[in-house]
Amino acid sequence: TTHKNLRGPRGGIIFFRKGKNMRKRGGSFSQGDENDYDFEDKINFAVFPSLQGGPHNNHIAALAITLKQVATPEYKAYIQQVKKNAQALASALLRRKCRLVTGGTDNHLVLWDLRTFGLTGEEL
Image 1 (spheres, one colour):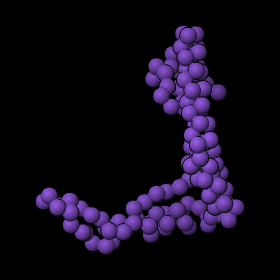
Image 2 (image 1 turned 90 degrees about the horizontal axis):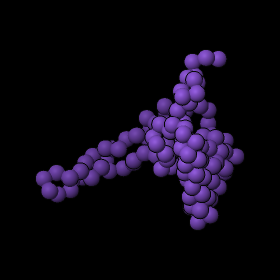
Image 3 (image 1 turned 120 degrees about the vertical axis):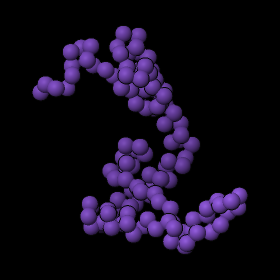
Image 4 (image 1 turned 30 degrees about the vertical axis):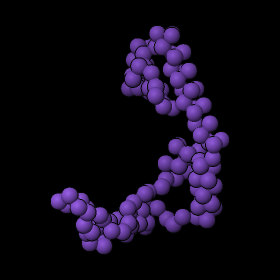
């Protein structure tokens, strides 16, 4: 999802292989059929018209700008700071005797077990 992972527009990107499949057989590479990777039509049909309408130009432009930004050193610094912030939050919670499901964080996620406070999510 581009809005969660890339700080971009709401949506997603599907990557797939296209073209020849080079298979290793008997110590050497041999070419398979040209259609070994035949995912494009299946994915396109599953997404449109089945799940969504067509893409809009403004959305495509926003996604292109997002992908350009992700390739910059500024974005790398930003995402490193996000991880540091998550680690600082995890450390602060652990100092206050809060239970984290994974005992900390290695990325931008902190999963806090609230059952010690009597919160289970079962009640409205």
